[in-house]
Amino acid sequence: MRMRTMEISVGFFMLIGFLALVVLALNVSGLNLASKGAGYKIYANFENIGGLTARAKVSMSGVQIGEVTRIRLDPQMLMAEVEMEIYPDIDFLSADSSAMILTSGLLGQQYIGIIPGGDVEVLAPGEFIYNTQSALVLEDLVGKFLMNQVSE
Amino acid sequence: MIDFMQKLGHRTLSKLAAFGRSGQILFQSVVAKPAPVMMFPLLIKQIYFVGVLSLIIIVVSGLFIGMVLGLQGYTILADYGSEEAVGQMVALSLVRELAPVVTALLFAGRAGSALTAEIGLMKATEQLASLEMIGVDPLRRIIAPRLYAGFICMPLLTMIFAVVGVWGAALVAVDWLGIYSGSYWVNMQQSVDFMSDVVNGLIKAVVFGFVVTWIAVYQGYDCVPTSEGISQATTRTVVYSSLAVLGLDFILTALMFGDL
Image: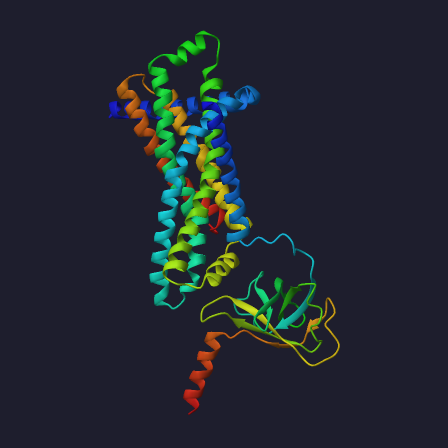
């Protein structure tokens, strides 16, 4: 009987330990197994991406519709090319949508905001968003402000 | 001068010999003669002593460390108006550093010292020698289950520590200080990556469990079989394993997260 209670408590201990790992995976690190590789890819070129990184979110009207998967420098145009994966149920982005890099909060993470256009045609997988607006770089702003002060 | 050199040489040689003996114990009990089927009941018993009985101290200290982190993080981050980032701060520091290290230190104090004292007393009362007399290998019967139990329990205890800590921080930050719970959890989920944070913390926990149990078992098996020797061995277990854990933590962190 003594052995039995010991074995039961060891069983519970192992179970709690593995449950803790699952909680860490799903709840703390936000591991998402379901929607991997199910979306479609679209691209956008930016003059300056600031601090944007892979896995940053792509949102429209504040609702997340995808995430950034890859960032590289386009060797011909010398601009940053951002590859985004959009969730498969978002298949109604109009072809003249524009993309801009925004910051959540004053010092928060950067993400891509997509603003819908008026075209009836929709963005097909692999197409580019041509209308883009770069990230707000603080040094540029300060520089412009100083130039204005000097010219006055 | 010559005397000093001789002393230094003697010290070095005896340290090297001790290290060799500990490696031999590890190899002979774990690698050379594995007998998992026969060992299973013994292993259950050791997991009970090493893991289940450590659960309370781990949960309580995890809760309080999480709560302190939540409180401190809130007061500091509130100065910059970004108190929503408290979840991110708490989760990263717990999962990467605090959970493995603090669990290993508590584990060394709670379970490691007990292992050393138990094995040392077995040696002092010649139980190990009599086991050998009746043809049972003490390395296999006494040492191996304790080593395996340590390897298994440390990662599980670390995960429990981290979860309880995150929950304790949520209790303070969300329920008492009034951060919006959505931003607490979403900030955390965006910044914590499963592979690079959770799995690396788990690897640290496995390494620390291995080192602490190894030191504890070796110190017990190799102690001077007197009451004084057992007390010295127990002290050494706690001191050596704490130092080893803190030193290894820096090395592992540098390998995993730093670009050294």
